[in-house]
Amino acid sequence: MIEPIIRVENIKKIYDDRVVLEIPHLEFEKGMIYALVGPNGAGKTTLLRLLNLLERPDEGELYFDGQQIDNSSPAVLSMRRQMTLVMQNAILFRTSVYNNVAYGLKVRSHDKKIPSAVLSALNLVGLAGFETRKAKQLSAGESQRVALARALVLQPRILLLDEPTANVDKRNVHVVESILRKINAELKTTIIFTTHDLSQAHRLTDKIISLLDGNIIDVCSENMLYGNFERDAKQQSFVNVTPSVRIAVMDYEPDSSGIFIDPKNVSISFEPQNSDGMNNLEGHVTSVTVVNEMIRLTVNTGIELIALVNPEIFQEMAMSIFNRSVYAVFKASDVRVF
Amino acid sequence: MRSRRKGCVKTYMDYIINGFVEAFRLIFSLDRDVFSAVFISLRVSLIAIILSAIISLPSGFIIATRNFTGKRLVITILNTLMAVPTVVVGLLVYTFISRRGPLGSLNLLYTPTAMIIGQFILATPILTALTISAVHAVDERIAPTALTLGANKRQLAYTVFLEVRFGLLAAVISGFGRIVGEVGAAMILGGNIRGITRTMSTAIALQTNMGEFEVGIALGIILLIVAFLINILFHYFQQR
Image 1: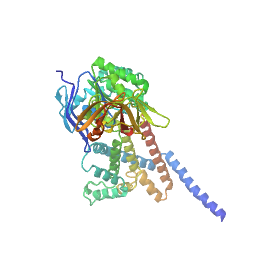
Image 2 (image 1 turned 135 degrees about the vertical axis):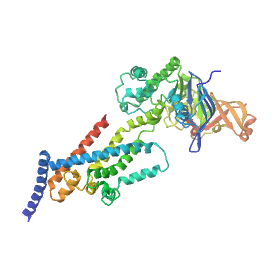
Image 3 (image 1 turned 45 degrees about the vertical axis):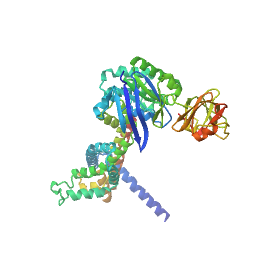
Image 4 (image 1 turned 135 degrees about the horizontal axis):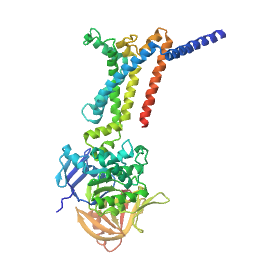
């Protein structure tokens, strides 16, 4: 079996007595692209920072190439120099664009290749000719691309990116995506990125890791959907998941495309519940299983939705539940947007 | 009655205008007493600020970047020391270096060295406190960015230093501004000896007392020009 480039065992990260990340086991294979998806606060950024050794887990171990990382600084430094993280809202150093991109090579004392490497990295992100510009005078989108060039110039074995296209204007999203595909194909760079955009995750990889409240949930998990945001005349927001399935949400986030509905917040009823901000999706129950003393129902409403209901409620409906159509009911405020 | 009041105003105006005319004459004739005071002021304050910077900038940097118990207390004490009146510092140093004090045998009282010590003590809390706040003001993403790009600890510190360089320059300039114009400590420790410890500020205080108003104005103008030049220099560096 090929040793994964990164292996995570039983890690736990705690901030202020709150467990923000808890992962029993996770592997990243060499040369693959991984997308981390999940709502805000799910632990995506924390995981990236742990992988980059910027933070230490409170419990558990990290292995690179099968080697456990001890916390002595030479080991951390040499490991960290094989990878780099491009942060969301990356900050540039208060100097020229050239010096920013050259930074990582300079600290590694690779002085000879700096001039040509910097130029080709800037070229790659479409900012050729920006060398002498002051970093502070760039737009947010340009800064983000300089930050990407600053990482690419290092040709890291592992490239970590936190929302790589969140601050990039729409025209340049595909530029960034094709750069990632290119370096993955040509340099076999292992890429791990977070995204709010599930369709972007699917465009770049089929290895999608979903995080929720600090835990990894089934890859491509239940009740995680994506579609286009829309706002009607009454300022009510919707996500169009399919042409026939439209879900009311509380938050209007046109830049996002993913939504998640906790199965515990989905109930099943024979009648629609017509109150404000309530979603009623009509469909048929296709399966019933028992999970942790709860009843887990799969409802096909054009899309598959999972509902976890408690047994008493289920018993009242059980006799006829397969024979007639039901409504999967959930509040717009229970739809989490990411 | 009316004409008398008019006459009074005229006399006041003459007095002030004559003061300025004489002041400019002293400046442009490169009056020895005036420029000796300027020279002594700048020399004493520059040495004091350089010595203070050597101590304050690294210690401010360390206090800002490390976490230790009592850190808040240290910062509070520094902020309190920033507000200590200059005469109190003068008095404190005086008790140590006066003839009967513990360091009396060094014969430091009424020397430029005594003034440098006083000004050093005045400048150091300011420089340290301003260094701490300048380092704290550095964007919190800078350090992880340097680390993720492969910086070791020394390179990280240098990167943060480069980010904070204008803040440090501002700290040094504020410290210099405080000591170059202060009177209390310079008077008590230097004694305002002509040609040796007479600085711009002590000369202004004393000559004005003695009725030599125009020397005071001349030195006041030069002091303002010095402040102005320093600020221009600061802005020049900040633009870069």
